[in-house]
Length: 212
Ligand SMILES: [Zn+2]
Image 1 (spheres, rainbow, N blue to C red):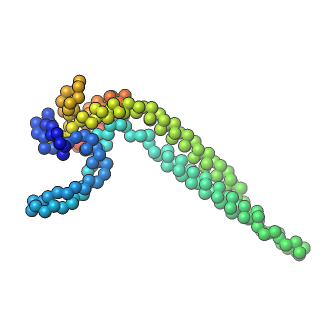
Image 2 (cartoon, protein in one colour; image 1 turned 90 degrees about the horizontal axis):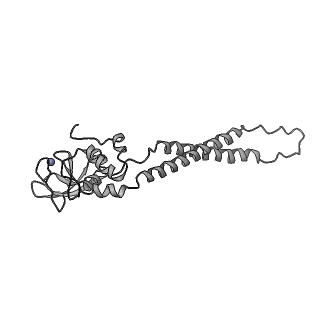
């Protein structure tokens, strides 16, 4: 819990109130803490805090989906793999030992498998990988532009206090904002609007554990 306790305006108590950044960061990972049990023994407790709550309290939207990145990676692997096979196996067949022209009856070397198609597969796959890279770069740049104002959002966000009993957030010490308890979705809208990407809050809705 935090140094400066704040009272939840919903339940008028402070024992389950925690700063939003702390809740958010705790939900990113397993939390290990030393606690004293009823018998007075200190033990180390590792807890995994739900990441659903952490996600709901995120100050910025999720970055663009990485599904396309997986496609690009797969295409890159196929491209490089087929290129290697084409170069080394195909090349080895071509540069095989010269037939010794001593005997007129030397049968012609059996033709190796035609690996020419691998060249095309490789070129195609590398082309796809390149296009995916360009698209990823474009999306990343667009996302960075969109979330340019994230420092403003994070500033407001850092004044949020989450009550684990009510499942609501209220803002403390923020000029122009009252202490009304906000649902996670309303808090997200308020914060994201501050960052200039409030319209995304309608698309990426916060889960509301109070309702589930
Ligand atoms: Zn409360």
